[in-house]
Image (cartoon, rainbow, N blue to C red):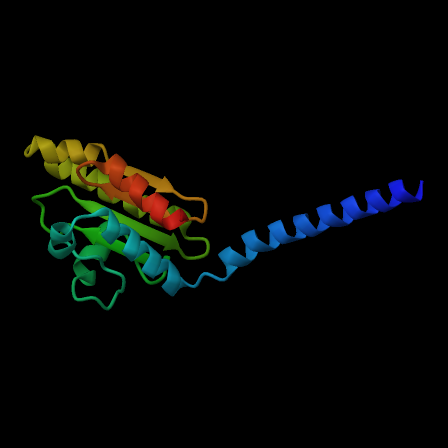
Length: 173
C-alpha cells in the first residue's frame, strides 16, 4: 500500500514538473522577442529565400529611415503607427510584379496591415492586367498569410510557393 502511494505521488510529481516546463518555454520565448529581433529574423528569412542577384536588385527595407522607404512602404501600407516590425522588398518600378514582406502589426492594427498588403496585391494585378501577362500571372498567384505570431506574410514572385515555405521555415526554426 505504501509502495503504491509512493509511486502514485512520484508519478504525479513528475507529470506536474513536465507540464510546468512545457508551458514556460512557449510563453517566455514569444514574450522575449523584441521588434528588433523580429525585424532581423524577417530580413534574414527573406534574403535567404532569394538569390544574391535579387538581394542586390531589390534590397530589403527594415526601417522608415531607409532612403527607399518613403517610396516603397506606402505601396504595402506600412507606417510607423501600424507596424511594430517589418522587412519589405518590393519592386518600386512598375515593370515587375514583385513583393515580399513580413510585417508584425502593432497592437490592434492587424486588419489595417492585412488590408494594406491585399490592396498592394490588387493594385499589382490591375497594373499588369492589360500588359505583361506573365507579370499578371505572378501577381494573381501572390500568397498572403497571417502566421501564428500575427506576422502578415506576403510573397509575390516567381516560384512563390517555394519562397513562402522557405521564409516560413526560417521564421519558425
